[in-house]
Structures are given as C-alpha cells and as structure tokens.
Amino acid sequence: MEKEAFLRERFRQYYAAHPVQEPPAIEKREFGVGVFGQKISQRHLFFPTFKELNGFLQAQTPFFISYSAAYYQSPSARPMASKHWEGADLIFEFDADDLKTECKQKHDSWHCPECKKSGKGNPSACSNCGSGVKVEEWVCPDCLNAVKKQVFELVDLLETDLGFSKAISINFSGSKGFHVHVRSAKAQALSPHARIEVLDFLTGQGLDLKRLGFVEKNKSLYGPSFVHAKGWQKRILHGLLDLIEQNDASALAVAGNVSIRTTKKALEKKESIVKSIQKGVFPSWVCSKSRAFWSSTLDFVSDELKLDIDRQTSLDKFKIVRVPETLHGKTGLNAANVSFTALSDFDGLSDTVVFGKKPVKIELLAPTPRFFLKGQWWGPFKAETLELPEFAAIFLLCRNAAQLSIPKNA
Ligand SMILES: [Zn+2]
Ligand SMILES: [Zn+2]
Image (cartoon, rainbow, N blue to C red; front, side, top):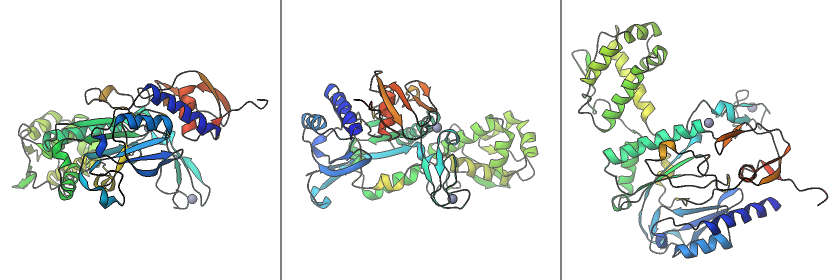
C-alpha cells in the first residue's frame, strides 16, 4: 500500500503542475479510469470541461485514464445505447508486443507454468512442452523504432491514399507504442462499413497484385512504372527496390524462393534490374524461372508491408484509449503528444520521463534485464535493494518489479 500511496502522490503533484488539455470535444466523450495494475476499473465517467477533468485528476488521481474515440450525446448514460453514438475518431494502436523484433531475445524472458522451463525471448509456446508461456516483456529503443516505422507508413497511407490529411494526432502510448488519432469531420462521419474498408486497405486485406497492375504477358511479368505508381503499387515497388538495393543475396533468395547462387549472380546486374523495374518490366533474364521468382518476391514484399493493426481494437465502436498527455500507471511515463515532424527523433523512453533525480531506495522483487530510460541503460539488476533516481525507481515500482525499501528501524 505504501507503494501505491507514494506513486499516487507523485502522480497528483505532476497533474497539479501540468493540467491536461486533452481530448478535444471533451464534453462528448466517455472516460474510464484504472487502479494500480488494472488499466480500466471504472467507465461511463463524464467531464464537461477541462477544469473538471483536472480537478478529478488531482482529487482521485487514477493510475490510468482513457477516453472514448466516440462522440456521444450523453457520455455517462447507461446502457451504451442510451449514450447516443454520434460518430467516432479513427484510432490506431501500434504496440511493440505485436512486432517480432530481434531485441526481444535480449530483453524479454518467459517461463512455462506447466513444465517450469524458462528462457530468453518472447515465444508463443513453450519450446519443451508446447503449453502457453508467461512472458516478461520490456521495450527498448529498437522495438520502439520498429513501431515508429509502422506509424510513418500508416500516416503516409492515410494522407496520400485515403485523403485524411487533417487532424491527425500522434502520441506515445506511455508504455510500448504509439497511438494515432484521426479527428477530422470526414473520419468521424465514417459508417461502420467504411471503417472496415479503411482497415482492409491499411492491412492489405485481400491485396490482389493483378488488380494492382502486376501482370503476365508473353511469359514475362510487367508492373506499373515507378513514376506513375500510387498507393500500394508505390509501396510494393519501393519495398522491392529496397530489397534489391540492400544487395543481400540470401535475403533475396528467401523472398524469391530460389538458391543463393541464383540471386548472387542476378545481383551482379543490380543496376540494370533496378532500371528495368522502374520502367515497369521485371527482367526475365535474372534466372531460368524468372516469372515464379518475381511473383514470389512480390508476394513476400507485400506481406512484409501489411500494417500490423489490431482489427478488433480498431473496429470496437465503444473503444476507450489513453488520454494523451496523461501518465501511464505501468511506467510512470507521459503519453506525450508528438508532432509528425518530430517523430523520427522522438525517444519514447526519454522524452516522456517526467519525474526527477532525487534518489529513492527500492527493493527489486526479481532480477531485471538491462533496460533503457532517459538516455541511458540501467542494470541488469539482481533481486537487490538499491537507490535509483526517482524517475527510474517510479518506472520499476509502476511495473510492479519493485517495492519501496522502508528502513527497519523507522
Ligand atoms: Zn513447458
Ligand atoms: Zn526491444
């Protein structure tokens, strides 16, 4: 309890000094809050003004606060139908959890409750007995950069191909990823059916290469020319040319389902291949089964480009999502807004640290991997008592990886 009281007081002081001015159209939103260890424990809250929201944050200081993507006539009414849904922002969530990055082998660990085997990484099942495993997940700059790449691709698709160039707002989730909110009138007015179509487009559901203009003629494969390519055509061509420019014979062999000897030989003429593809012709002289090779490579590239968006989350009409510029109760980090132009330099594990450096003594409940916070690496630590700057201590306390160390004679 001491831990929760300590954290709540530090959160309260933060909110007292940093009033929250999110989300827009506050009077039409439903809010939900969470307690320590539980992101949502209460819903159907309503704050007609920011003054009331901030008063609540200081009086009650929840560990998590979320708001509805939807706009309602009566946000606090129950059941849901009597709220009168008026429309909703488009919201996309990207989490490092969903991406298979190599760094997970370093910072994540798992154990099997069935056979007690444990190991490094983030497998979906136990390597020994096949049961589901419990994973201890951490994030690092590498996985957050992989998430950012998805955000860049999403925003490009939203703006260039779907015409949602207005009112796109991006924020750090406060923990493992980013949220993208599209709050334009056009987005709000989308019907449930249109929302499914938007999602299908973004995730490349039912992507048909033939319909995109990649067609066979006289045993050769042709595609759209680079200068005229749009949308998915452009993304696929970019992805393909990137793969070729990498000059990695084994990566290309995997994509094209041929031997490395074949791709090594083909890459000797890399420049001519690139020139030809830019003109819309997939050279038939790269190998004996060039048509199959190019088809396989195009399939591989387009699969890689499909955005990892959780369908369930994006299509949930009543979804609530973290209020930007509020604290995340599992990290103590700020779910900070970040402009599109600042995103590439934005460091989710440094730029969102809000607490100070005053030393705090904590007892770690279990060993930790090496983790990154506020511009530097910390640990790895044993299950030990140690003094850390407040922001790092709060991070571990919020994760429930530690408790406050109380002097015995106090
Ligand atoms: Zn097992
Ligand atoms: Zn990582």
